[in-house]
Image 1 (cartoon, one colour):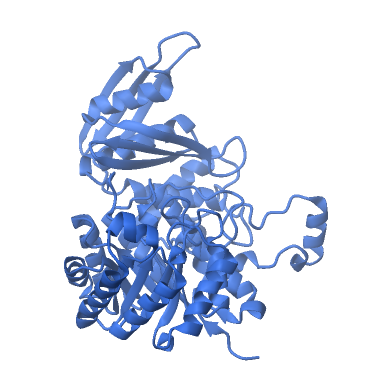
Image 2 (cartoon, rainbow, N blue to C red; image 1 turned 90 degrees about the vertical axis):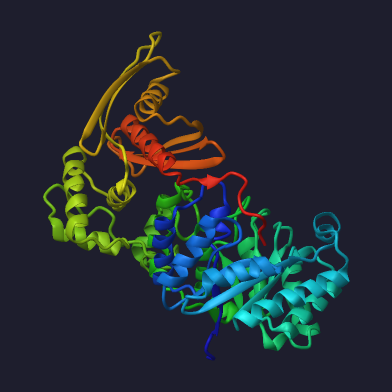
Length: 516
């Protein structure tokens, strides 16, 4: 058999993914995620949109200087200011790439750009040439390509390649395409653009109709050599092509596609969990590849078949995507070495003070729970990461509430050596009272937009994970807390959120300027 064709994986979790409401990351979180993407072995990492904000510029610059072994990309519109700003952020990267884009569809030409076809082509050429003068790795995207007239799309793509584009990306910006449609667009470019062999054809598919992965695979079938995607499929509106799904589709059905990627698939689950912990965006249980139920079997017939031969009902091995073979492995008699080994297997190597801190929390949890699951360990690790550098921490709380009475909450918070205790009477319930007294102590005030609590694992003694999204000024903030006590989890999440507010570590509500 011939060697499979290698498909470039272009990850845009840190750019398009972060634009998803509620998925904003601060600089340290972006750097942590960037390192995880390096370990996942993606080929290209789109680190951000440098012109969008000073924060985005600094993040792209920091990532470009920190990561090795991967191309680092910055997004820019086809204008001089954007392109120069992108290069300023990227120039220290080991392998920089500038990604320029310009809308081409009739609806965008008429209502957004108010430009004719000739001006579109001219600006595309000028943008690519300016970027090429700064960097020899240039990607061009005709935004809303899936709704662009095919004759004009071929014209623009040919002009961009002649101007120096080394990759031409074909975005289904609004998730309108179907697999046959999207595959046909790629085939038309392959057949009709004379210089198409001088550039890699890429695809960037959105998931508005739930077809992003299918559309991306159709592009590969018809000649695309790069797929743009995000971890957990996060992104604008309904999200993007899911990295883990499209990678495992190519790996599992290599017999059909004759293609594969260089992704280290055993890192898929740890990377998914890391992103979920950073953003607070919970992965649905039945999500393909990385959902909790992806390799779970309850039906008797399925279980019988699995015991006889796992391939009767599993087309992939759980360990190939980062699941551990055994979930329940640790208890109150387990030592540091066992915890460190399990944490490493889950994608979070611990040592020194970090191991000591998580081990202390592990022992406390083991005294409360009989059964310690992998998800419990991950929750403890992510809790410790979240608590780093916090100005305020929760020391104690007490809530009183009856069916018809007025709730009250007493909270003790610590800030350095200072300990502050206060009480609040009123509110709509225990959480409202807790949040009000925390605001009273810290002096911060926010508008809560979303408040969620769910169990991390199974059983009555499961840890609870709480996520809160709130608004203060023109920024959106997010907090996360974990505890076997669901009320305490909510209080810790709110304290985490308040700390972000005090640091100004939020996402501008207006968001970035544009997106492909």
